[in-house]
Image 1: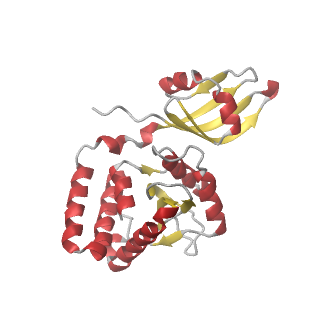
Image 2: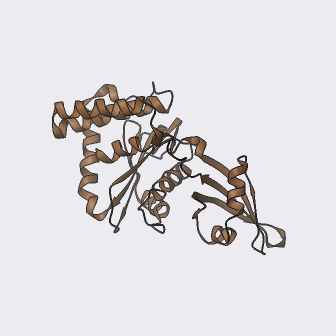
Image 3: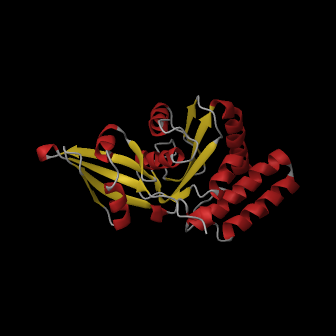
Length: 265
């Protein structure tokens, strides 16, 4: 279960700001698209939503595993979203799903993905105490529960001694201050409304003034937001959630901005 463990170590675990399924999947896909090495035009958001429209990817016990496959090279990647109120995922059980594990699967990693999801399913099947997410009250509690699942999954594949060693190492990393754990902290998610005029000027409305100034300084940003659902500019990843056209051909883009990773001390 290397991809899930790596996601936890690198901070790709976030609290989902909305309970809407499509918005949750879009946000998690955007996190994968922001990973260095992932092709800028990989269209992960579109692939995830198209795959989900074909078949529901609910796994079991309140966990969903949406995924997208790609012909690109690279590593198996995972992003994890936790919803305190749960997401109406459209599964047969009809219960809100609190945990979404989204996977990005290059062709060369298909076997690794199948092994990871199988190990996860076995861990849930064999360890009843790991199934209930109700006691989890915050992201740290979710992280600890997932580390327990990683340990249980690796135990069946690599032996009990090795699993416990990795589990203890991962627990220590989660409990200690970890610079990368802040990389996808919800504080880095900034809602913004960007007004684009026909002459190319943009006006950014956001609570974070630094983000507004940074984005307003990006040349050609308005045109890119009109053409592309996901834009990288000034170190930010901008997801366009909705666009509207007003008088004088001015456009308003409702965006979610993932701000740059803070420098490491």
